Length: 273
Length: 269
Image (cartoon, rainbow over all chains, first blue to last red; front, side):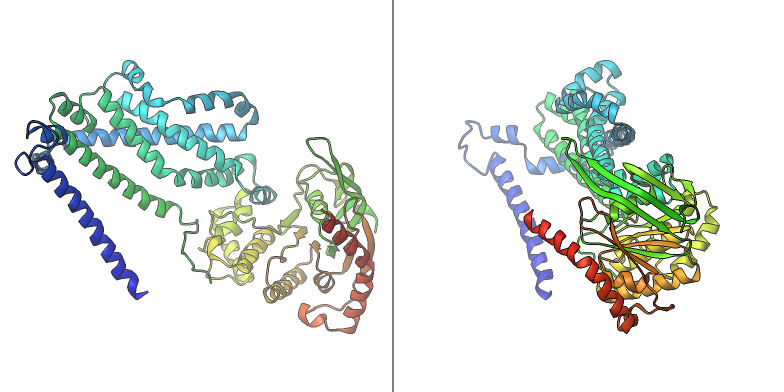
């Protein structure tokens, strides 16, 4: 379609315009000199509560140009990656086990439901006590979040294995172990990959929330520090960095997904010969 | 033919399903089917008459409530290791390429992978899919997926081939092509075949013998017809010969009442 490309461009321009408008509004409304104090009695109060976009940008620039943010970003990244990896492996193993063992699944069912419905972020202080203020407590929090996502997906994935595919593999001579490796695990993995965005996102949430509740490093720690000194610009700068970082992670996941799930039909893919 | 010398002998099979609330449903009763080595037998019958049930019993996926299954004289316990099974619905592993699907059985049996790949490629070529080795099932058409499934089954060289309406989802042209290919593969290396279908023309054009099942429930064989058409056959052309039409008329006459019964039952539901 000839029109769709220019439409897309126009949409992008409008999106940028919206972004610029929000920034301008933010700038104008918080600048001590541009607007008369409408709500606040002191012209500096708006900036105190909402920060100023230029100062936020300057702070981010300062962090990256002097390199002071890299150790924090690194720590957050390591926590996210560890939480994701451990949570996924754990979820995969337990999911497979429970899905293939009706007795264990029947026995544990109410407990799994209970633990899943518990707001698990509340475990963060306990993990702090158990594992200290280092990386381990954040990883533990992330693992509890990732585990359930992966677990439920694996459980579902195993349950949804097509009866025909399973029977066919058995008739072709697959042993129980081969069924697990060649049928159940690949089927479950497709569900795990489908939930990759969710689980990576939650690993990240676990890391940041953990840092925020008690740590000596990480982006969450930066934000906590800035809050302690009412440095609202740094808080916003931290939030912007976290958002950008989350988008980056999501992009990496999308790439990984494309590579790992070549065997799945994608929408719009019509190549059939 | 005595049961001992048959490749596959189902003797007085009865299959009764019991649902969780205790309802009983007898799909098959008093069913005896013997297939000689190298014989091509088709089982026809109206929809819902227990044709698939019969095949599931023969392959060992389903244990009969009564009666016995013998494979080359030996009572069947567990899965039928001498049988290959071609399913009506999609049975390929979607996460494996065409080639990996074809070689799956060899891999499960511990055949060395280099040798398995050579055999797999040769089988893909035999079913007309050379060059499609690295395609995933979703990238193949329905007819091509059936060919992959056929190669997947035949590569293991089973003594008995069980086919459950394998071509029913294909369009008529593809279907006739596949039927001819099946006949060609079969005549090159004659194995016992049990071919389930609801299509009488397909049954006659392929088989040595056609068995007609009554409408379900409590389905059972109501007729058996030897097909004396000469081989090799072309499934499209043989339908036009007088002998084919004669056989068709005779078997259809036996089937008609059952089809109507089955239809009436469906209307009621």
